[in-house]
Image (cartoon, rainbow, N blue to C red; front, side, top):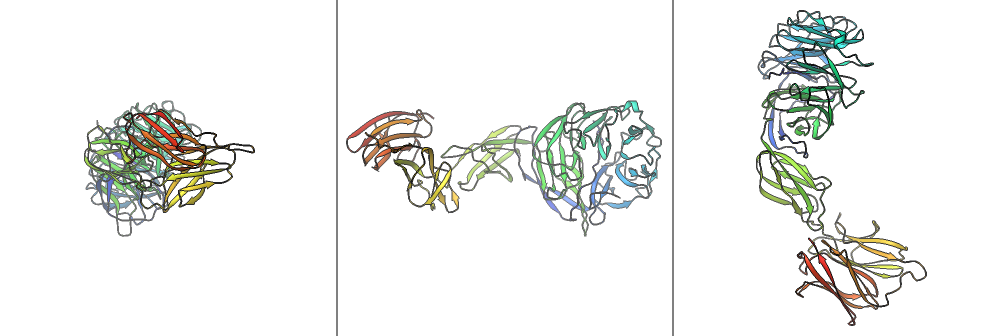
Length: 638
């Protein structure tokens, strides 16, 4: 299928002119509408060349010759974002450029290149506006008298072949001013009103906003509609896109059926959504994209199924990205470098505009490959001790990186091959895995657990001595460099201390939740086990227990931790030991002097060496004051 390679798009914002040779980086995506965002997979060079335009002038449009693909004509924009009545031309595939001006109308809308000598220009201002043609490489331009006049506003010109062409202007006389030609532009005939949907109130077309594939042609309007024709512009229909009737839209197509529509304004940077059609523009569906979609200029990459390139030179959002899955997922080519209008012949041949500098520059030649065989890697990053997903962890494979979401999940699309994977986040040991294999159109799952360097306190327990709560805990096992603790009641920090005992005086009546964190300089650990304390009311809010008693653990069964409640009638030595079904000691949970009152101990499902134990039945035995002994059963399920 032959697809016309005319690429248009007009205007962008003010930027300081820059001139630089830079190495870009890209990643590639397989057709998969999920996944995350990744950057900098493999280096790709944009080779800078001089546009021939004055300093501060950029490129808002690149048109590839319909009959000679080594011929390129580019329309200019000035530093204010307005279309400049200037052009530049290359006859050697963009290696060298020669700038020129028009001896013609004013208010350039767009260019359409035929070959190195022949090009059409659309002008939209005044009585001399209309369709102009040069046959001498831009030295002279002749008005071809298409019918546009002082009341008109001409936007678009396109040729399907040497004879058949189309032109589009804003409504005049109550309907769009559309023209067709069958003799190469020597004469033009206006399309009858009955063949065109009526414009909505205040609706008009946009300079250069159109696309064409074979006999199909589309143009966007300022009121969210895409007009489409399947017969070279003789009959038309229109559809309102999901962007709505207050949005300027344009569309770019991969073939006669599949295309993307997007908001089309001068200040577009990175956008979150596009509209997609699979029926040539009859219907459109909104798509919230994945990755950074640079959205001022779009072009389709011929020879691919559905690869699009987006770019922007909007201040603060300069860069380019591309999608191989029809616009659903976008991968960054460049970030922080102004990339203006683009044009591609195939996945390895293309051009992009930039601002001309004081020493030249202003045009780039693509020197990479957008058609890379890819696969996916995905997984979940969790905390080794607590099991929760870690948000914000940086996962790196090769030179491609992404970050985990709020659940600890990540995914990346990569070129097939073998990689070293690393994961890092402040407060955790760096995780590394070698020989991660990425296979074509396959998902490699890599889940991993991160060891927290900022370990929390352990075995928080409490004693009630109304109206006070006495908290005790153990230091983080194996931790290095911790400097103290923070005590929390009901998520409010009460105090930062260095001791492993804290008395909370005059606690209000009610149910309260306590936990402790460990401090490592300015870094704070996750919190310890939580304990629930119920402070009673009345003149004697906290009666001491009449007898010592071992309560049941909760939850039971459990995974991975459980709370064991117990009470002591008199201050004395208390032990709570945990045994397996063979009667072997697994863990000594309590072995100290305990004040009279109600207490709680937490078992983390580990043995005295800190190793996790297996699933099964365990028994916990309490001894108090040499007179009280009791044993109960609990079940650990993993």
